[in-house]
Image (tube, rainbow, N blue to C red):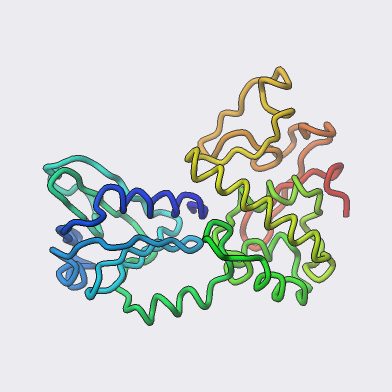
Length: 269
């Protein structure tokens, strides 16, 4: 599932490609046809992202809310758009570009009130200007749940997925099974600040790199990591491989149906 930096990149891309001008909207698959007809011909005025939710604002027509889920993808291309291939839920077109949405978990038309309700139920997003860790801390500091699970709880902090979860805990030296209530406020703020740094880098680069300069392939004289899930990382999908810092084998287990990765040497309980 795409993590928050990807959704913020998509919001910026939609605004760059379609913003400020009328957009043709259709649903070749048919499942969004009624709402697409309401959006068709409207100007894309705004594009917003909160966590893993993408929101495209079409003025009085409302907001197209998209959650990509596990299988959703957006593909941009030029004009004229080719005949749709496969199940295209939503196609947006301008005079010189098009974008096809396939396989999302959600694609629906929101009223402004429904958009506000979405923001209210989500936790703070490290990439949203003005968001702070305070609301997340209120939830985390009272919880017996592990910090690894809480970081994936979109009501505690929005936009963090499996990669950022594993990497920020490693970088802060926090064992993933520590209960949220066992963190102190300084540790939570450090996690938040690191997420802001890492996720902003992800927006800029279009991929997730989390290793510090002294642990890059060039600095360590090691081969670069080859993995379609991201760039240079410390523990994510490195189970059994030596930690780049202490040399102990990286461990993995399943937590809440997701793979968890950590280093027993650098993240002591």
